[in-house]
Image (cartoon, rainbow, N blue to C red; front, side, top):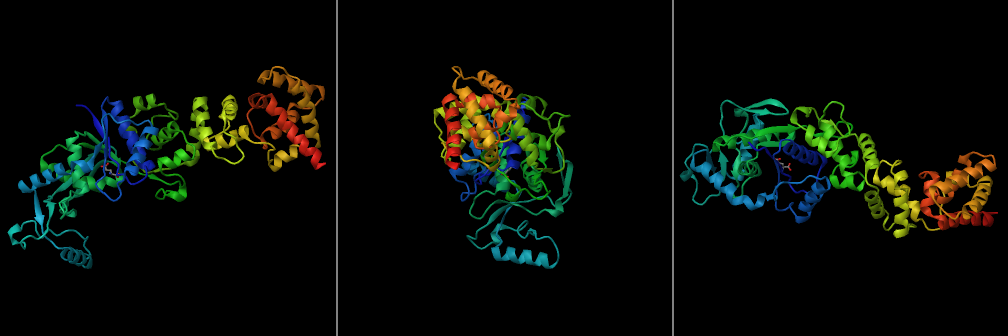
Length: 472
Ligand code: GLU
């Protein structure tokens, strides 16, 4: 049997991390078992399903490196088939027409509530002859759900879960306008797409009981189900905006690498020994459902940032530079030309050691494109007092004399200067760093100066000294 999984998002405008994780699990599971991973866009809610919302899903998945093995299926295009199956159930006597008016349904609900019963459909038309309905009256098609016994699902994550059939009512398959309901459409699509494993959030568990009844009524085999615990906020409450990023686009904007987000989301609900940092190949090799936990996970943004830092350190410098350049585009006081790009690329090995997100990386790299004169942080200002300026003047002269301006020659020059003046290397590096960046952090000073280039270094030193003479 070929294992086939699917990710079936409703295009609502964002790709929530919970859904993104479901996509990842389905993808890894299929790959692990040499099966197929399919994508189905559940776009039957015409009001919410815009092309833009669909693109958000496609872009998000592509960014995460989650690729479907076939063209995506659009649920809305399969409406005729959903109707066909509902009519077949009607034909078989497994479904029936219900002519209840909205008023009757409201009265039914109110009566149930008054009697402290759950507000379920009471089966008014279950055994009535449709000819009893007024001619031309609108109707819905309902499943004749079993009333006795239990529906049992052997869930691959949750274990055996069961519900008494008496607790469920006859769900609607076709609405009065003839459109199929979501619950029904999902079953027909999963069956027709030969889905063997349905993995989705455990908020769908009650749907699964109802869907199982449709499978059984059609005499279809049930797929295996795996209901994944949801992702909560750090405080255990439902993940929401106040906790931080919650959609894939948010994480991307906040400067997380897709490798880090995928790695984190995988580890959030699944474990394999102590394995923390896992490449896609390792994920595929190791992923299986026995490692999926049953309790809800809590989003830990600090841990994600930590993992992101790890992934940034091994990420390609050109890729990181391209990303940083995009983030710097249009920033006040920052020139984003080829020269800035070359400087950032040259410093990238040092820059990426010091940042946890691409946003931080861009902030730390911005000085490469600063226009002169720089503005200084109070700490940097302090380093540029009288002593600092004396150092700048002296070491500036030595740096100007270099004919070859590389990290090595710069390093040798700074050391020689420190030695000659019997000061610590830090006392040379600090004012230089302040003069180059306006702040107190940068990659190694030798790398930084070499990346900026001799002319720029001398210009930045001169700018500080010039402001010193005006100050004085
Ligand atoms: N369309 C559903 C959702 O976005 C998922 C349905 C399913 O996985 O069966 O929540």
